[in-house]
Length: 463
Ligand code: 5AD
Ligand code: SF4
Image (cartoon, rainbow, N blue to C red; front, side, top):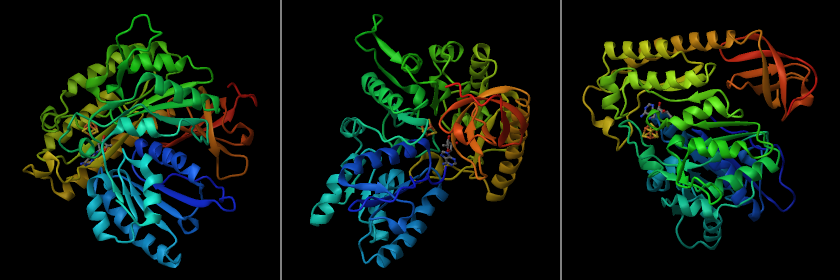
């Protein structure tokens, strides 16, 4: 979460500076990368600060109220920068706030030049052209995911050993707290051929880890490609098996999943696809059946725990992650205790917990018995302390093990290099500057709640 680092290059003479600030989830991180790809042919190159940019894009998140508020305060700061630039700077708002509150943004902040929703950013070049001609619409919030994927450049500019690949967008689940079905639209799965072509392009450019992403990634389905004698329909398990066969792809992950869509074949893939990381982010949100029902999650706490049992049966060392919401309308002390019990029963490697935030237009925002802020605070603190305890225990249990670490970036100290284990634990190693973008075997020698310290087993990279 938070903003994505920009590439540290300054634009070539004649090029235009582009600064994209990304809020929210993995879908937005992917979209920001693709916006850079879309804008590159127009001469836009990433710069490090908004002050140096000709075009600033805020790629926004609408999931909780706080995330939305940040956009308006950031726009206030950008307005001053735009004035300082003599009006040269252009400001675009993209992402889910753009989708949900486009008109309001244009009205509240006249410094904004363009508003573009998550399914329309392939139209940015046209919008920029219209802006210079001072004609046409500065607001594009269509829902045609299919058209977007067809229109995006087939090449990708990759900057590290791990890359997101969007395979699915939107959501038809309609959890009663969530804005996603309204901002990202209906579930849409990209076709197998387009996904595989993008995965090959990433592997060709040196990417070692592909993260298949979607709002409901395990709802992905698609017609089997012509070469599959079985034919019929593929699910995410089939897709993972196929991507695993692409040369150079050492690791595969997927996120974020819904318990209802954990198909048997996907579970089996955790047991038999070597490249599939032993990590599963499977949000449950709450542990009380009454609250799960009010959330329209369409499963019980028991259903969820049984799914985990099945995953652990084929992959006993799986690292489990989840999201939780505390203080959903009507949540009693007993309901909250049920959440704590579920956390204890499941055993997490990591988890995110949020206070319920009423979102305009969602069913839960109008429900009776909204929970007081102080109660939400207290429950959040109790849940976080349990989650942190489990994260520390999970990390401590890896001390003494040798793990293959994918090194992604330099650390703060000279020679220090950072990466992550197959279980998505962040690992730092001294004297390893030569390991950037590689996978190497590491002895884990220490652990905190959030990271591991490692020592290189030998100086050789293994992939
Ligand atoms: N309030 C609080 N948390 C929310 N999430 C989604 N909507 C809300 C909301 N209205 C959380 C869920 C989801 C994660 C991405 O954000 O836990 O899994
Ligand atoms: Fe939101 Fe529920 Fe869909 Fe996830 S499954 S995006 S929480 S509506």
